[in-house]
Each structure stands twice: as structure tokens, then as C-alpha cells.
Length: 511
Image 1 (cartoon, rainbow, N blue to C red):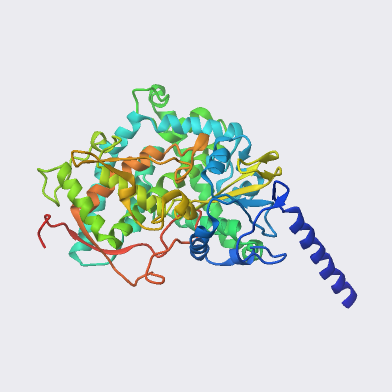
Image 2 (image 1 turned 90 degrees about the horizontal axis):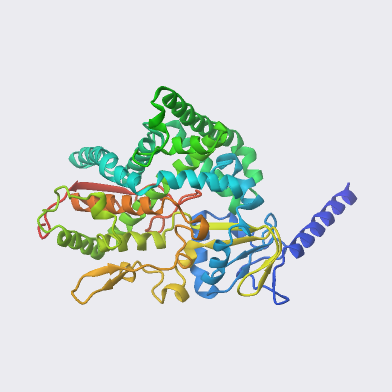
């Protein structure tokens, strides 16, 4: 018995040593530097067992030491992997869409949740879903969303806030914003009433947290021995909801005038119709529908939550934003509805301070804090790093946002001024940064197709919310170390939400 045990230990050690050596990545014949705290054999695997926010905090802490260097990331359950910090390397990765793909590692870990959807696809399956999505995100559709669909939903949001204000009750602003974006996506993308209180929403959030754990926890298979039943039930709920979207659309289309579902340029295109026009398999359309719903509702609501939170923690910018809105609409008293049409919020320099605030909050709290690609063949990064086929390339947008080499010595500070350029007449215009320095919407061929919608929607909601409401954060509830942190997820929800009290806004200059 003892002999067999020793043989097992020897075999495990031999496998660990072999696995460790097989994951070594080199540059100019020399092994890449490794992250601080890397352990023998276990590599960095044990560090990834920590809560996600602690892992992101650690990357933010060591970012000044990393600079633009490429580092080897050694984890026993991970293929050969590197973390890149140089925008030049990231540009090479994101522009070469056939060389760097989602890959086997990503697809296998996220297959249960995303299956054949656009977030989990490569090649022709990705291209056909992107084509359908681009048709949906047309300029005429965006105008329809903002000017016709969104206003009554904002009235519903205000009604909910009014109730909280009258009762002086604490309300979770993240939940309010998620309800807004969920209902919006339901109407414009699927012609359905979708509520965040549906079983689907809770099931998706749970499945997303478990899926995210697979990417950072080397022992996730052990954990799923205990969470597996609930996870499988959640996945089944998500799949059933996706098929319900498809079946509902098929029934509607069968009863409608054929001309109403062909997606002519003059009509308002429904996303699920565009998907059905391009994809023959109902199961794939269902996967795509769930993927687009997640991308459309979750990330925008979360980004708006982090933006409001940033303003609450930086009241000087809250006041600056209010003053800039007053200058843009001098005849409107604070608290009254603003004439925020698609035309007024969609221009490159529309409401520049609101744009700058949103861009800065999104920079520091990216909707997808950590992303990765996998090589299809061996290649060499611009800095000389040699990557074998099947290697994983990781970039941590949360860490890149805190890189002094990219953003200057105040990289970690909330400073919307970095997005503004003052003009001789005292006005400000919005400046842009390379998407490879600030990859919050991805870049290259896989640039987020919903980027413009997210920005225009966020601009209108942000301006209206701060103009019509006084918002006070309720400190202590859900905080960790005096701050809000990201929850376990594939995206960036605020753990515990954003508890606030709201009251109808007073005119500027009045207390």
C-alpha cells in the first residue's frame, strides 16, 4: 500500500514537472519573467483561488512593477500562457483575428452558458452573428431606441425612484438600472417584455459566476461537485429562455405581413428577426439571443452603476457635470426633464463632460476586466515573445487602466479631464484614445458592435438621472474596506449593488 502511494506521488510530481516545463514561454531563447509570488510547480494557481476582487486588486498593485513587460503565467490547469501589458502587443493580438481566436480553452469553459453564441464563437459562425447584429445596430434603429422606446421606460424608472424618495427608503441603483436595460433589450431586440425578476435573470447571474470561476480557479471541477446541480438547473433555465425567445419570434413572424419581417432599411429591425434571417438552426439562434441579451443589458447597467458610484465618491465632478448640463441647456431648471434626443446625445462632442465622466469610470471599471485569446498557430509577438500553437494570451483591462506608462502618473486616479481638451473659447471637446490602450470595448475586427448604443444610452440616462435626482450613497452597506468591489462574474457587477437614497433634485445653487 505504501509503495503504491509513493508511486502515485512520484507520478503526480513527474506530471507537474513535465507540465511546468511544457508551459514555459520564451523570448529570444530566454524564459519570460514570471509574476511576483509564483510558486514552484503550483505556479500562480493558488493565488487565483482568491476572490475575484482581490485578484484584480493584486494586479492593480503590481501594475507599476509590470510596466509594458510580457509575463509568463504558470497555472497547472492552464495551457502555456502569457499576460501582455504593451498596447503594441495587444494591437497585434486583436488585429489578427484568425491567428488569435476564442479557442478551445475559452470555449470549453464557457460552452455550457454561451454555447454557439457570438461571445463564444470563431470563424463563420461568429461572422454571421456579427452581420446580423450590425444590421440591428443601424443608425436608424439607434434613433428609434433612444427617441421612442427609451422615454417611457425612463418614466417607469422615475416612478420607482419617486416611491423610494417618498418613503425615504434605501434602493439598489444597480438593480434599477438593470431593470431599465433589461426591459429595453427585451423590447428592441426580442419584441418581448423581459424583467430582471424572471427566473432567467437569477439563473443567468448564477451560471455566469460559476463560469467565471472556471477561468480563475484551478480547482473549479472540485467545486462543481457541490454546485453542479444548481449550475445545471440554471443552465437549463437559460437554454429554455433562449428557445422561448426564438419560438415567440417564429409565432409572431408567422402571423405578420412578410414585408414586416424582412428588415427593410425603412423599418425598425428586431434583433431576433435578423438572427432568424441569417441562421437556420433554432438552437444557434437561441444561443445567439442569450449572448446578445447578456452583452446588451448587463454591461451597460453595470457601467452606469460604476459611473454613478464614481461621481458619488468624487462630488467635485458631480458638480462639474451638473454645471456643464446647465450650460448646455441654460433655459432648463434642474429637476425638469431635459430635451435629450438622439440628436443631442449622439454627436462626437455632445455633452462632453458627461462623455468624459462615463469614459473615465469605464476605463477604471471595465465591463470585462480580464480577457484572453488562444493562438491557432505558432507566432511571435512584436516584443519578440515566441508563442506556440494553443498558447493563451491574457490582458487585464483593469490593470492596464492603472499603467503609468499608458496613462501617466495619475493612472489610478479618477480624472475625467484626461478625456477633455479645452478650447480657446473656454469650451471643451472630447478626445479619444487608442482602443489598444483602452480596450474596454475590445478592438480590431471584434470591436463591440454595441459600442455606440452603449455610449449613447449611457449618456442620456446619466444626464437625466443626475439632473432630475439628488443621489446619496448609503455607506457601510455592502462595502469592503470602505469601497465597492466587483462581484464574481464574467462581467463587472457591483457586489451587493449600489444602495442609495434619492430625492427630487433642487435647482442649482439651492441647498
